[in-house]
Image (cartoon, rainbow, N blue to C red; front, side, top):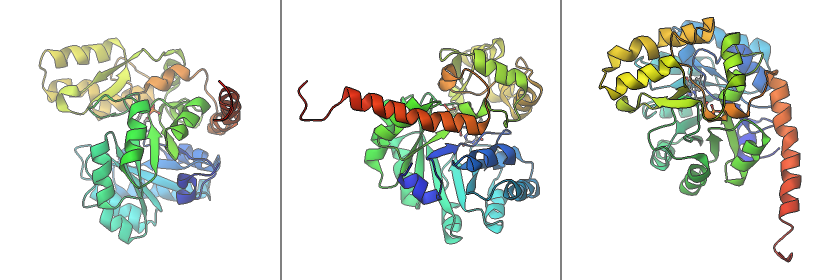
Length: 324
Ligand SMILES: Cc1cc2nc3c(=O)[nH]c(=O)nc-3n(C[C@H](O)[C@H](O)[C@H](O)COP(=O)(O)O)c2cc1C
């Protein structure tokens, strides 16, 4: 496949492993890169710059293909050391997300790094372009993680962002098969970023109970929490997440719900599979996931299926001069 995103990163397929807190490790990222996409290591998964740099060393032993890192600015941590580390280690691609990346883009660009910022609205996309990013990821309401506060689905958001910025747009949110990939390209995106689908792979270190939950979960089984703090997050509907929502509706403070939504609880869910101890972040595309595969299988299915989507579309639409 050839798009502005495959050309920007020098990859075969415009498919990107998005930042995945605690899960975005070298093995998973390398598997995506080796399969022809772009794998990202998630800097926020590491306690400090040294651990993060070790992971960058590790991925270089696992793949000779392009890879990148995701540095999320949404947390309470100062991520400056991770930006410095990425530059020191000569990481070629950095995806920023969360807050405004102002103050970081310039240094990265001066070091020759390609910078992509993750946004959930047109206005944030425009701002990111003003800062000098090379591309944006437009995350829509369907997404796992933090899909922003505007609640706009991808079919409306992606073309709006495409029409509003001069840089390539990567679509994210609810994309979990070749139909989603081709739909995103039809909407004007130059690539896709996936989170939930790559959680359901053998290379992902999520506990098997998390992966089983992905298989049995439908598109209707997620809810949004953390809205009172303007940090909306899509999670699996469980007694625990419903309790969080109820506490929020009753005016709870962030510190009251932190034991259930904070980092420790998240790790307990992801590493030990204790789904009642915290909340499980995932997107609506989970309804499309039927089985656990390797990353290579998931990518191959997505790319091969694209041909069928094209064949179907050309059957539906035979050309402007054909009689309806
Ligand atoms: C478990 C999980 C953790 C995530 N962690 C991060 C993160 O640390 N940084 C980030 O920028 N995005 C994060 N995301 C969002 C993904 O990078 C991606 O944009 C999103 O998953 C795309 O939607 P999808 O899940 O429908 O594919 C996370 C998503 C999930 C499901």
